[in-house]
Length: 212
Image (tube, rainbow, N blue to C red; front, side, top):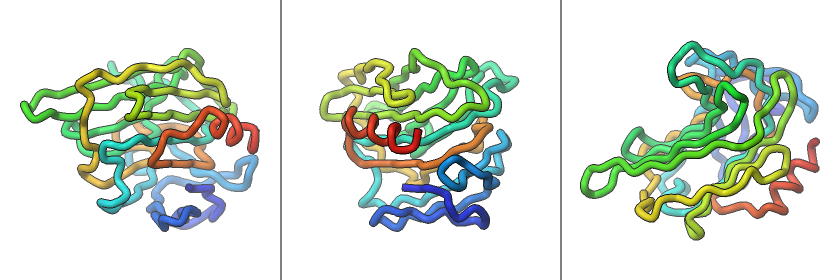
């Protein structure tokens, strides 16, 4: 859990019991709840968290949520999207969340199976974010139910089924990034939450209401 209220420096404290502080090379800015990280779309300005073996996602469910205030969606590339979250090693076991040039949040997950084939899954929200406006974005990956659900401002954007063959173990690498060295996010980010469980719809709604 990261509220980024330090406001300066190169460390963002994890307020959960895990003590997984983030190493920050992004800038800082004011936000409605205090302070936020400011990403400039350049590869160097991100936040990194080293995740120990026992706290990685593995084959379990997980959830990411954050408040975002995007400054720019587009990037001059065929893959016209900006990355807000990543974990793992591509293509062996990789989880990413992006914002596309339309402003719609989306995801791409992949892993290599025992035969060396890449198994992947992806999807996008029906609702896009707006430039220069704060929005709450959450993604819930429920491995038990085999479903992924994206939320924007507390409202579900629908669910996407994971492929039946999606049995990957997301334990490789151990580095989680907010923003990314590839097509980095451009805008503000605040109140980041990462859980190793599928957070309920009621909890997502409550987190949105708490700071809206």
